[in-house]
Amino acid sequence: MNVLESITKSAEFLSKKGVTESRLNAELLLSDILKMSRLSLYLNFERELTTVETDTYRDYIVRRGKFEPLQYIVGNVEFYGLTFNVDKNVLIPRQETETLIETVYNVYKGERELNILDIGTGSGNVIISLIKNLPTSRGTSIDINENALHVAEHNAELNDVKERIKFLHKDILTDLVNFEDKFDIVVSNPPYIPIEEYPTLQKELVEYEPKDALTDFSDGFTFYRVILRRSKEFLKNNGRLFFETGDKMSDELKNLFVVNGYKNIKAKKDLLNIERVIFGEYIESSSPKSI
Ligand code: GLN
Image (cartoon, rainbow, N blue to C red; front, side):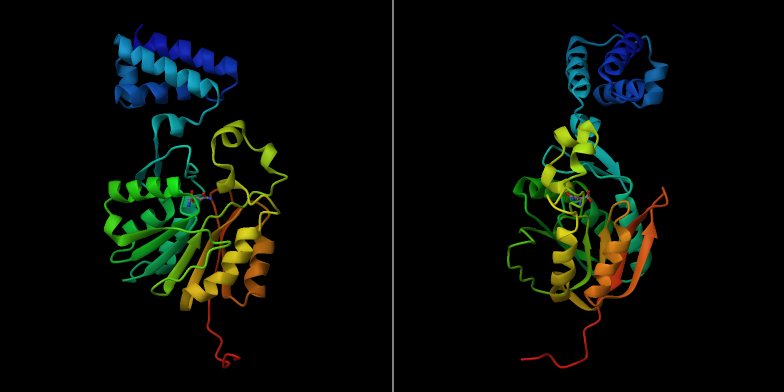
């Protein structure tokens, strides 16, 4: 079969299985196999596929037909202009998370030697994008999942920032964490989907993405509460804590910043006009510490 016939047949198959944007999916998967842009596919409609290419394409299309996310099949994703490898151990970086990077970047651009902590690093997309864009900054990433840390470390290497980021296997909810230095910035995109909303998510997410990266198995605020409290130990005076959050969660989250004594609390909207990022400043209290 040639390129056009293969795409047409695959798109029909995916559409029957209920995959949305079936033609686009069929094209992107073949682009990946043939190492061609989608435009080149259109210019090469008559090209015959080799047996190996056909077999690989069939395998990819069957997997996509079972709702495996496209990014896991091709093994990578673009985020903030960089390429990240992804597999089933890590959440697929989302476009809305770029708002988190942009917000931190806009507050700190021009500043040097920043020390950044990323809690729940997953594929490493957040810390790597920040380190890449803030010259002379360095970072520490923690995650509960060792397999995710391997993916993140590999991504740091791919993006040439491995020597500027430390990766540590820690559970922020239970482990004592003593860092050598304090941080200018703490950033986190924690699992914030309330457990009762989890079953309503897209099939791709529920069946393939790591559940403990998506939900806290509770009201969605578990990690926010713990990180807001613990970051006061981790941050320098005037350091800032940045969170990504979900639709309709921002008011409660801002309130938690207030309750925890953070100042200058602000929100940043994403492209869909949802308050996606909440951040606040930690100011050390001047009153003497009680003994
Ligand atoms: N930091 C990663 C991201 O923003 C992973 C987040 C997570 O696993 N909850 O995509």
